[in-house]
Length: 91
Image (tube, rainbow, N blue to C red; front, side):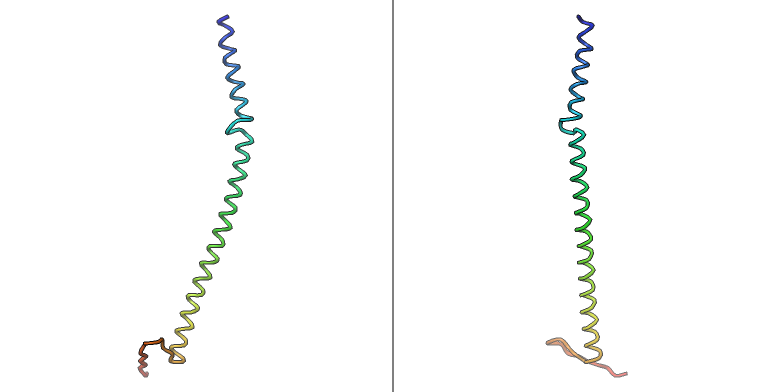
């Protein structure tokens, strides 16, 4: 009788762990589903990162563009901001 108990317990434990592998938390299907969710989130993160980079580049372009327009207006047209005194020294 004692010789049969240990193999029976081991077989039951093996069956329990095998069942867990296929249907429980952390099972093959659960890991596959989580991997798909992870891949989808990585793709969404990549799209968001690219959108952020495009917006940052657009902001830089607008800032530099406005600075260039202001500099040109000051040098070529002598324009000044309100409450600003413009002094030009001849060459």
